[in-house]
Image (cartoon, rainbow, N blue to C red; front, side, top):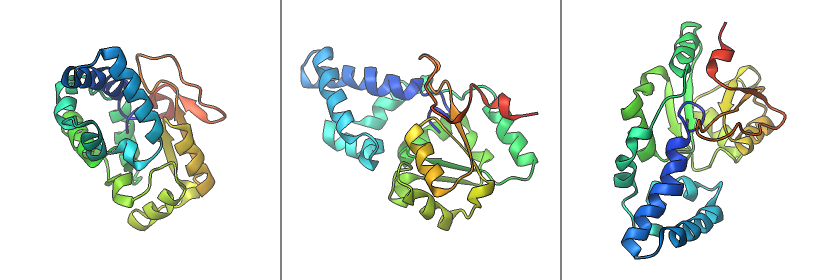
Length: 203
């Protein structure tokens, strides 16, 4: 979802700028000190379910994370051509699932802001399955909720570790995103086929 369907600028700004700002105000430290501390704490949890958990960070940082997200929710934005692509896929008779590492509270906020939920047969978070998408076991658990043929499935994602995980499970068609965050330079997409926008996948 984040960086694939939605502009990752919201999440990057939230965690790298907004949370350090509010953390500094509440804890009486400089913004620079707050950012340095938080970056270290984020790094220690990267790629785990805790890193993606609103509840974990609310407890760890003693902040109302969802309230802070609402303060900058105007930055939530759908990437160009996403809706047209999803509509084309549904017209072609394909089943479509949104599988995300985002916490269900973040997913609810973003769907409320974007209205994308109606384009999917299933919305599921890694927290529901108990494994992050970086773990190949995630895809086995997803199979139980949303049966799919890996050889005939397409996964688009902005995370190389997630794409590596999906490839190890046998998902054949893998697409990386060149610009997950529209405010940042083009991302290195390794040896994966990559797109700048979903327009490239439509006739």
